[in-house]
Picture 1 (cartoon, rainbow, N blue to C red):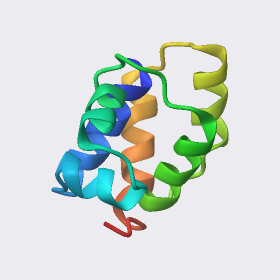
Picture 2: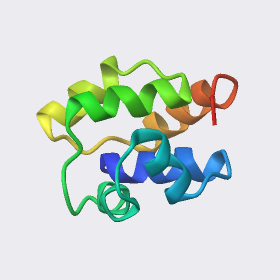
Picture 3: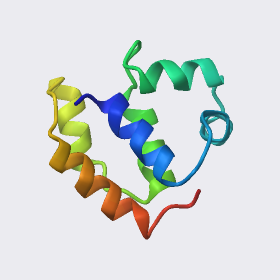
Length: 89
């Protein structure tokens, strides 16, 4: 799974819309949608902002993105569980 899958799962878990997250990040909804579908790459600065929204540690996620690795479903689950109790959304 790529980073877009994580973004979508985190957002879905919190019941937030793409528009709500885009507004928090001060980007167009279409831009955020492209991040979720991996049509465009999310830069590390934006990933940090997203991680902050969900109360996540960006270190592992950032390494995966910088290396352009596909991460496992277990990693997604771990991110979601960490985010569940810390989300600002």
